[in-house]
Image (cartoon, rainbow, N blue to C red; front, side, top):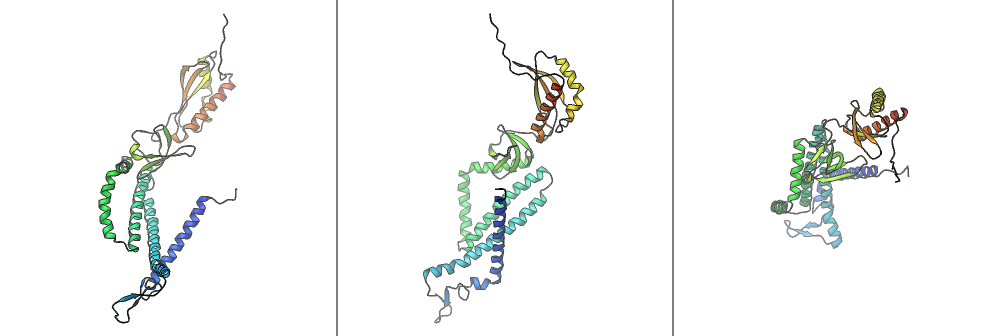
Length: 323
C-alpha cells in the first residue's frame, strides 16, 4: 500500500491530459475551420448544391445515423473549443487574482471571495457559449433568464442572504482566512470564506461548513495572544505557601520546559477546594495556534518539578467513619 499512487496525483494527471487534448483539438479546429464547419464542402458535409438551382442546398443521401454523427461532430469540436478557452481564462484570471491578493490574511480572504465570484461568472458565460454552439437562441435565453432570475430570487432568499453575509464578513475584516475562531461552540481555523459558506478545520482535520447568514456570533481568538490556564491539584496536607516557594525557585526551569509560551507563567493562587485536592491556578500567554500545546507543556513541567520536591498529585479519596 505504500507504493499506491495518491488520488490527488491521479486527478492532476487526468486533468493535464484532458487539457492537452482540448488544446490540440482547439488548435486543429482553427487550422481546419472551413473543412470542419463548411456544410457543403467540408469533411462532415451533409448538403450539396442543387444542380438545377445553385442558390439552393439539398441534403445528401446517407443513413440517418451517419447524418446525425456528421451534424454533431462540428458542434462537439466547438464545445471542446469553448471549454478549453474557459479553462485557459480561468487559469489566467485566477492566477492574476492570487498574485494581486496575497500577503496579509485580509487580502487572501478577499482574493478567495473574488475568485469564487469570478469562477461562477466565467462558467455561466461558458454555458451560454456552449448553448450557442448547439444552435440555441442565446438572446431569447438571456431575456428569459432575467425573468427567471427574479422569480428564483424570491424563492432563494436564504442563498442571497448567504452571499450578502459573506461579502460583509470579508469587508468588515473581523474574520479572515487563517484566523482561529469559535462558531456555535465549534473551534477551528478559517479555511475559506466562500460565496455561500465558510469552512473551518479543527486540529484533528475535521471540516465544518457553516452558511454565512447563520454566523451571527463568533469568537476570533487570533487577534491577540491567548491565555491558556491549567489547574494542578495538591493534597490538603500540603502547605500552599511552600508550594508557591517551590514554584518561584524553579520558575526559570519550568519556563524553559514550555517553549510555546510567550510570557512568564503566573501563579494565580488557589482556584478551588475540591473533594480530594486543593487546585492551584496557573496561566501564561501564547499564540492561539499553540493553545493546547502550551497547556500540555505547563502541566508536564509543573508536575515534574513538584514531584522532584516531594509535592504529590492527589488521587480521589473517601473517608469512612464508623459510629
